[in-house]
Image (cartoon, rainbow over the protein chains, first blue to last red):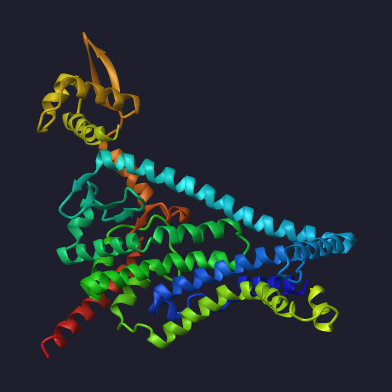
Length: 325
Length: 126
């Protein structure tokens, strides 16, 4: 019961407090790849903690024994004991519902998203292959359209698409920056990263962590791809390429007053480049690893302790404690 | 049908370029492909395009004329609509290079970028 409570409190804290502390953090813009990993780790950790909290309520912890028969017997006894009392049975049922609901909802939404994304990409690709002109030298498909735009269609049959408007607006160096940006998206499978963040946000729309993680990850993958393009073509060239493509058309809807992500990306490339120090990147990575490990340790801790205590003779106070969760 | 992909695109190119419905024989004449595909192949692929809804088919004397159901520009506009859609749930389907920017933002950033480029040019020779 204590394990479940700790896990549940951890998941709740992570889901509400963490996004408030981390949102729009400046260090993430200086090390976007680390930022993406941290947001992913927090999401995975909260999800794991919620599922494990449910399971911890459902399945009572028993003393691990080397003798299989003895272990089974201990399991059966613990289960009978828990479900004999109405409170225990209710807690067990609630735990099972929680674990299954979280797991089932995630898998269901993930399955739906995969089907939808595949269909949308296939439909888009079928039309694209018919109306686009392949430019094999550059490895892109060119669309006759005056508005400057560039995008990639990820997946197994990937295409990088660029409009004639964009080709007119960009010089050769800037075009190289655009292509390097799109290649970075492909190479680092940013589409999968985004899809997963979206699945969590759609599956649990009330959880601030998933909602904010989605927006932050969408911003950070662009900055990460900008950095890859800038390493190849130069930061100012990449900034000019962004401006040439984004500034050439009117926005379809009014954007937020705080300024668009596009503008933030250009500003970031113009300002002096200050990548995060190695020490802070290591510290950030460790934080992400700890976040991932915490739910497993909370569950694994008592089990590991039980293994140790198994060597105590029966009837000692320590051995009795482990059977009480 | 994958091997017909390029021929499908070439046939649609021919019909769009002609700007009017064509007979299979005329499509074959408009196709600029080497080696020239067989009449039967072009006929088969044209029929496939008709079944898929890309081409309409009208009887003209003893033969049929095939015309584009939708203009190339409309298809391109549709693709651009998907690519530039502001809808958030599209972001995983396509990865666009950059989203829109407000005109005011673009002006200011052009100015800042100009300054930064000038600064870099000044510092470079040293």
